[in-house]
Length: 91
Image 1 (cartoon, rainbow, N blue to C red):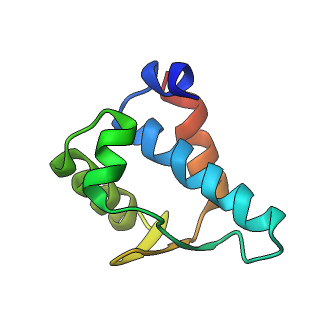
Image 2: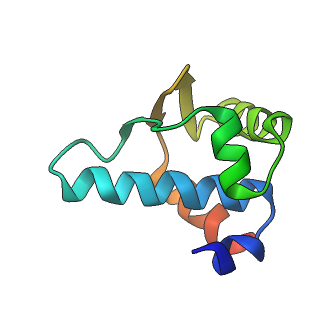
């Protein structure tokens, strides 16, 4: 996964993380569109190789575009297909 993430920009890395969490939630028979982030923004940044500021800006940008809705650690994915497009285009 780290090799895949290292080839993507910040938006692609965050999109990949959100899609991965969404798939995990789906496999556990939970809603794949309503997620609770299992780590802090700082931990997400460390995991993805980004600064906390970049993680925050990326979440804000995705929310402004209507792709996700953010409420603290709660994330609601509004447009799964848009996240997929970001994930695959950000190489």
